[in-house]
Structure formats: C-alpha cells, structure tokens
Image (tube, helix red, strand yellow):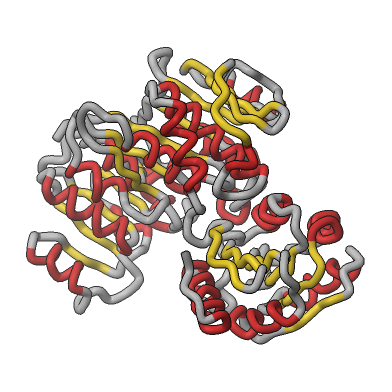
Length: 456
C-alpha cells in the first residue's frame, strides 16, 4: 500500500463508529497506529468492535474537549458537526481533522474518480462504475464512499491497475487535505445541509474540495448550465470538461434536439435512456464525459444507458401492473429532488409524499404539481402542510394515509391505466422510519402485495 502519511506509532482518535469508523480503525491499525474510537454508544457487545479490541483498539464514550489531548490525528465521522467539543478542541490544538475518505485515498495507488453534487451523485457514480468496468485491459472498477461503502474499507484491497469511483458528500470532502482524484465530477449545487454548513458559501467551499488538489494533468467535469458553476470551475487547476443539457457548451458532452453527444459524436437519443428525467440526462452526460475521456466505445456507453433502470430508491422503476408504472424515489428527501422526479414524467402522476417536518414549505413545488400530478397521497408529519400547496396548485384529489404502506392501495384506487405511481416524499424519513431505504423497501413490499408481482 502507498503511504502518503506515516501512521506508525501515531496516536489517532476516531470520532464516531458505524461502518466508516470501523473501517478507519481497522486500516489505521494495519498501518501501525495506536487507535482510540469514541462513540456515544456502549460498544462492548458489538461484534465488530470486539474484533478491533482484540487487535488493540481502545474504545471510549468520552467526547469532551479533553478527550483529544495527546493525539496526533482526528478521523471524524462525516455526519458529526464541526461544533462538536472534540473537533473544536482538535482544531484549537492544531491537530489535523480528516474524514475516512482522506485516509483511504492515502493508501490507494490506482486511479481515483470522484463525484459530488447536491443531487444525482449515486446515479452518476453507478453509471461511471458500470462504464469503466467495461473494455478494460487490466484491473477492475469499483465504487465506494457516500454510496454506502467506506473508501478506507475498499482502497487497501485494490492495486495500481484498479479504478476507484468515489461518491463524495460535502461532509466527507470537508475533512480532506491531500485528496486528489484524477477525474472529479461536480453535478450541481443547491442550498442543502445548511444546518451543518451554516452558509451556502461554506457548503460550496466543501464541495470544491473535490478539485482543490487537482493539477493540469487532471480533469474537472462540471455541469455548465449555470453561471455559478461556470465561475466555480475557474477555481480549479485541472482541465475543465463541461457537460450541458441546455446547450451551453459543445466542448464536452451535451444534449441537443433530444440527442446526446460527446463533442461532435452522436451517442444516442435521450428518450432511449432507461430512466426518465432531465436530471438523469445530466447524470448520463457526466458519465459519458468520464467514459469518453477513458476511450470507451459509444456502443457500450449507449447500451448501459439504455438498460440502466436506476439506482435503488432513486427514481427506481419497480414494476408495471395493469398499465400503471410504479417508481420508488424514497431518496427524494428534499424539495429539489421531488421537482426533478416530477419533471421526468410526461404521463399523469399519482404522487405519494410527506415525511419529517424540517420547517420547509412547499410553494416551490406548486408549478410541478400543477403540471404533472393528478392525485396526491400524503402521510407523515408534513402531510397537512403539503396538502396546502397541493390545493394551491389546483390538484383536487388528495388522499391521506398513516404510512407509505397504507398509501399504496389508495394510490392504486385513484390511478388509471397509463398513470405513473410515484413515491417521491420531498421530506426525510425519520418521523416514521429509520432511513429512506427502509421507507423505500416497505413501499416496494406493499406494491408487490397489492399487485401480486415482483419488482423487475
């Protein structure tokens, strides 16, 4: 393994356990560090923690400012805020604060491709990995990162001939120092996670860490459809490769008259893609750019885009029954994601929505509701607030359910052949479910029970 940083005999504090903390602790132990893991929970009965204890890792529940005293490095769980007492103390003492993607990248000697953005990261990461896995002369292409698999878990298993495609959140990127992807993708930027970052400027700065260490030998693939992103691209020292759905540039990948191109080469018709929506066209254009920069064939790229049915819980096609098509977009935990999902359909939509109340209002959705939605089934904390905007949009058919599961038969009853039945909540899941994946799985189970069919 390539070692940019020497961790032998270093005292490293891992703040937060979960899968990323466990992966970081395991890798650091392999690298010869003295590791202490701090988590709010008592992990003495945790099987993974027990294995690490046997390898010499110390565990504590102490997260006071004094807990970091005597340590050389802090590896922080991405979700833990920088206002945490341990993090504040580490910064004050000049102790480096990193996330596990930084640690994992330090032992990876192959090619790193990194993707960030407010929406579309997982779909773009998946498409790029599929494309780069094809037509190789050596090695493999695998994904990791915010997609659910820690980089520091995967990187040590890879060689110099392999490609690691990493989905990166703003939380992860804030904790990078030497992180250096050869190909970096910026999909889009909306105002997200401001409870964590406090300002949009801080959020953007975190996203731009993806290109901070790039040089003129690298590539920065950027959505060219807003002036903001065009201006941000100028901060990069890498070669700028634009992608544009709106025809703002033809120097990279772009859509024109319903057709997808790489520079002047026709790839395929946009309506042949396996997943609908302008946002998925943008995801595809980003993937096309990365694949073409790697010399991949047009035929292979087009085949993957035509057969790709979506990432689970992200405008995922579930099944068709009696002329109705069911889609699962449980990952739509904000209003922008639901806007994108609705704009992807031309057929009438029966929308299942609602969830955790974070104080959002839904006026922004009214134009989309008016244009695309024939009926709405609402559940969760936001259902009454959501209903107000539905009425303002002129949608008269509003149903209320206790849960998403209860909402499925209601959606079926108000639908007709040719309709789309779409779960796209525009809200987080934590009012009723542990995560959006659980919400999506329960939705799929309810569809299967209702129709007697299995998801495709």
